[in-house]
Length: 596
Image (spheres, rainbow, N blue to C red):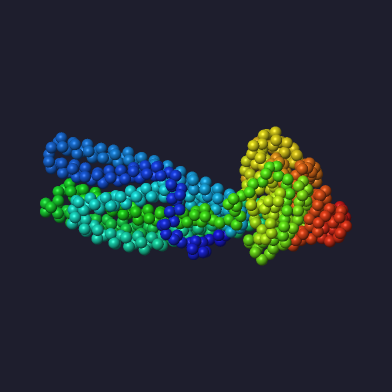
C-alpha cells in the first residue's frame, strides 16, 4: 500500500457496484429512518406520475366549456403540486440526515480501527493516504447516501411508472419509445466500465497527492533546511497533475456518455411526438392525452438521463467503498487474544525475555533481536546500552507489544503479554520516547495526557518533578498556552521534559525511558535525573541511553550488539571486564575530558 500512485492494477479499478454492499452494516441501525425516506420517495414519485393526469384534465376541460369543472381541475392540479413540494422536502430531509449519520459512523469506525493498528500496518501505507480515505472517500459515500441513491431510486420509479402510464395512454407511441431503450443502454454499459476504472484511479491519485503533501508538511523544517522546496513542489505538482489528468479523462467519458444518452432519448421523443401529432389531427387522441403523453415521455427521458449521470456517481462511490472496506477489514499482525487473561492489581513489574527473536517486517532478513533472554526484577532499574541499531529501542517496542516476536516469549509478572489485551498491558506502563510527541493543545493538556483525570495541582507537580515548571510558567498563558502543531513553541529539550512530566503523571509501575534525556542541557538533565531516581523507587524501570553518564547508577546494565546481549553487570564491573562497554565508556569519559 505504500506506493505513491495506483501502480497496481487491482487497486486502479473498481470491481463492481456490489462494493456498495459494504455500507449495509452501517445502514442497518437506521432502518426506520431509511424506510421513512423510502416511503417519502415512493410517495413523491407517485404524485409526480399523477401530475400529468391532472394536466390532461385541465387541457381537455377547455373543450368542455364548464367553468366549475375547469376550476376543479385547476384546484386538483394545484393540490398535486403542493403534495409534491411537501413530499420532496421531507424526502430531502430524511435522506440527507441518513447520509450524514451513516458517514459519521463510518468515519468513527475507520478511525477506531486505524488508531489501534500496530506500527507494522503503517510501514505499508502512508498516513496521508489513510487521511484521504477518511475524508475524501467518505465524502463520496455521503453524496451517494444523501443524494445519489435517493435520486436513482426516484428516477427508477419514475421510469417504470412513466412507461406504464405511457402504455396506458398510447400503446402505439409507447412501442416507438421502447425501441430506443437498447440504443440508450449500450453506451451506458460500455462507457460505464471505463468510467468505473477512471473513478477508482482518480481516487487513488488523490490519496497519493494527500500523502505527499502530508509527508512534506510534517517535515517542513527538514525540507527547508536542505533547500528541498523546489523538489517537493515538483513532486507534489507531478502527482496532482496526474490526478487532474485522470479526472479530466473521467469527466470527458462521463460527458460523452451523457451527451449520447440524452441525444438519443430526446431525438426519439421528438420523433414519437410527431407521430402523436398526426394521431390528434386524425382524431385518434385528444389534445389532453397528447399533452399527458408528452409529459410522461419527458419524465421517462429525464429519468434515463439522470440515471446515466448517477451511474457514474455510484461507480465512484463503489470505488470509495472498496477503499474504505480495505482499511476496515485490514488485518493486523498484533491482535488482542479472544479470551484474554487479566493482571491482578497491583502488579509487581517483573519483566522477562525468554529466547526472543524478532525481525522488523520491512527488514525480514535482518534480525533486530536474536535469541535475547534476560529478567528484570520488580523495582529494578536496568539500562540498555550499545551502538545505534543494536536492538535497544526494539526491546521497548516489544514490551509495549507494538510488535510480536517471531520466536520466544515476553512475560509481565509471569504472564505472556500475548495473553493480555494491549490496553490492559499498556495501562501499567509509562513511556518517554526518544522523539517525544507534543499535541496541538495546551501545555497542561499535553501533560494530562498521561492521566486524563489528573487535577491541575497534580499536573504542575509532575512538571516540577520533570524540571519543566519554570519554562512552562514563563509561556504567554502559562500552562494554558497552546503549544502548536507538534509543539512548535518548544525546543527539543523542553519537549522531552513535557514528555517526562507526562510519564511521571501516569504513575505506572513500569517506566520506560528511551533516550529520555538526550536533548537536555547538563543542569536540566541533573534535575530530571534526580526526579527519575525518586520516581524509580518501587517501580521497574528500563532506560535506553547512549550517554553512559545517565545510566551509571542503574542496578544493572545490559550491553547490546547486533541484536544480542554481549555483557551484563554494573557500570564498574563492565568497565573492569573490558570489551564493548569499556570501549564506549573510554570514548565518552576519557576522550570527553581530554577534549575539554
